[in-house]
Amino acid sequence: MSENLNPNELWDQISSRLFPQIGPITFDAFVDPLKPIGFTEDNKRLILSVPDDNASAITEKWKTELEMNFVEYATEITGRFIRPDLRTTENTDEKNSFVSAPVTSEQHIPFSQDAGLNPDYTFDKFVVGSGNENARAIAKAVAEGPGKVYNPYLIYGGVGLGKTHLMQAIGNQFAKDNPNARIKYATAEDFLNDFTNSLREGNQDNSNATALFKKTYRSLDMLLVDDIQFWAGKPQVQEEFFNTFNALTKANKQIVMTSDRYPNDIPDLQDRLKSRFEQGITSDIQKPDVQTRVAILRNLQDQNDLDIPNDVLQLIGEAVDDNVRTLEGAFHKFEAKIRFMNKPATIETAKSILAEINANKKAVVTVQRIQDVVATYYMQTVEDMKSSRRQANLVEARHVAIYLTRTMTDKSLPEIGRAFGDRDHSSISHAFNKIEEQVEKESSIKELIQDLAETIKNG
Ligand code: ADP
Ligand code: MG
Figure 1 (spheres, rainbow, N blue to C red):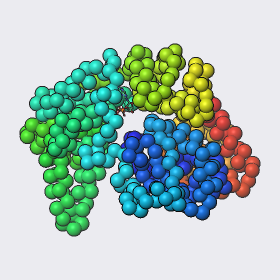
Figure 2 (cartoon, rainbow, N blue to C red; figure 1 turned 135 degrees about the horizontal axis):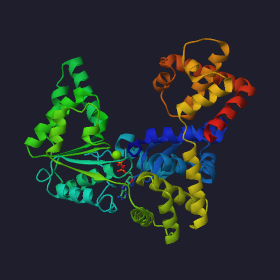
Figure 3 (tube, rainbow, N blue to C red; figure 1 turned 45 degrees about the vertical axis):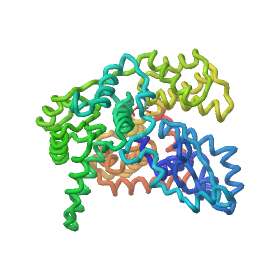
Figure 4 (cartoon, rainbow, N blue to C red; figure 1 turned 30 degrees about the vertical axis):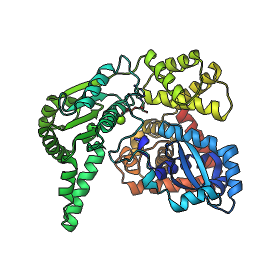
């Protein structure tokens, strides 16, 4: 997911988090004028161009204040440690390198090398523990003898446990051993999009887009498909994958897939695909135990040149037990405290980030929760709120609940529509706009919204 963001997407997400934090005036002066240009070679910095007028004030503001926020948000979004790299056109050195070799966002999308592989996802960087040692052993064997022993290979496991990392490690190692090999990493969604685009283009101009799609996927030496549970209930793409699958395996080309569910538990997965998958091998990745979690933290520490006492790593490792992604997030939060807030690498600092993480957890807000709180406040039922009744008090409750859902969750307009009695997305955005206007004009509404939001979060 987020690790595949391109510079524009990452910048959009970071700036939209900065906005509520710093307010519109600071935002317009110091954030809005910046443009994302790309990532640095090592993928550790997002290059932002600063317009010449006001450049020094902007740079100063970033150094003293905004960089911290940036790093924190970038870490939350990507799980990696990314800093901003502000560049002015006045700066001659950089000017030269820019003019002669403009960094287009295309070139610098971090993981869009031909194969689509993230160079960081290697076996070297994959910490082995009881939950993943089998999966890793088979992955190694597949990387060394692709198409021979285990084909297809399906890696199965919960979110954030290292499926994508392990799958790409296979690709990276195979690419290293065989520089000419044709390898493609695609999410199941990419595959679906490529397929539907090829159909559409083929229909529009009678081009050979469909043939090209088939050729691209069927002439590979190794195909890595991530998160195949995405194809649940999508028979057309399953059909196409079935054909791709057959073409590749017949030619002894390796297929690796990941899924967060067993094929048998993927709704509406065609039987013939299931039986094809059974011809190969499946291994699962389990949650890491404490020891492995601490080893992962130690690994991150070494990679990031930090020196953190063992008892601190132990404390974080014991506390953060959901998955490796959240563990990495905790580590980077800790790292940001040390590097940018000059906090010591102590138990105290670790406890403070753990408290923050727990606070965030508590703040996970569901639509159900919002509806309950708002309905109670207006003395209505949730059912009535979802209905089409138009009594004034009820309408207001509905609008307020929709507004809160839009601001407190990441649900899309159509999703919100479905959660509110199957309304279409235009009536949702109408409701939202209405309340938003009132919030701006009337302080009583603003306060009401804030109170309700507090109640929802603390419930
Ligand atoms: P999934 O695909 O299962 O959701 P990912 O492969 O994206 O999970 O892993 C989430 C994050 O955790 C990645 O940054 C990955 O590098 C890291 N990670 C997962 N497992 C390990 C491990 N065993 N050793 C080191 N890093 C890991
Ligand atoms: Mg994944």
